Image (cartoon, rainbow, N blue to C red; front, side, top):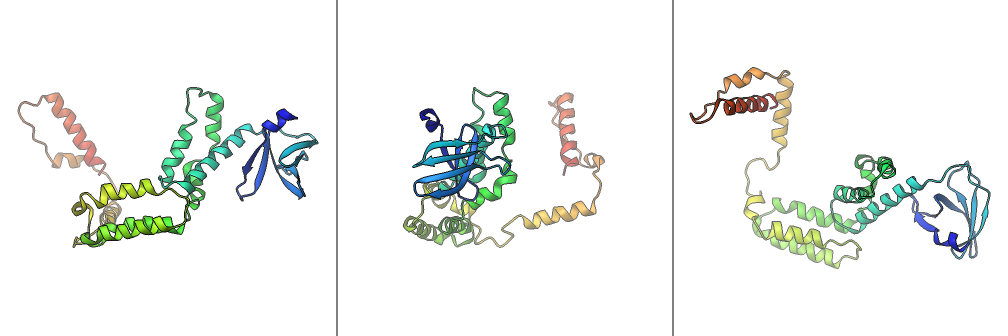
Length: 259
């Protein structure tokens, strides 16, 4: 039994409850009585149970009617690691997802690892639950204050950002916001403010108008014309060879075709 104790692991379910993992099988709490906990296999069709006393397995009952779920348990472990980082860090969520998945691609990569990676949900399918891990009002307020800096007077940028830094430092949160704050301070607030600040810009501040113009143009022009390239002739210096001229013309035609 001592060997079995070493293999016991407790994990968190999607609803925040505790599950017991042993030898590739996962158990949910059936009921508790004093220091004893009675666990049942998480599959409703399986009657296997485990009893623990102060966290130590003391009894097994019934056999599982299915194979161990080693791969799925590993997938769940990776997802929990991603969610934990999303709660504790301010690194972009897509970056966290890619970094954790890339850890699987080690020199020990084999067919089993490849199959396990295929079992992982895509970022698109799980991004909602990942972003929900960051539902912290203070962090969201910090990000919004950083996003609004280009739209306020340039002279007020530093004061507004310093006020945001003071607020986040006083907030009672477990998320490390230092890398994000340092990035905004060093690369935006202290440098090139006249380039990225649009408070005094009298024209459009976003590309929505340009996207709308492209959308309207595409609806009016339903076909792509390769012959447009002939109406925009290219002139080459005399020292450019015919082969280079032909390559440039092909590239020119391709660019116009894909506009």
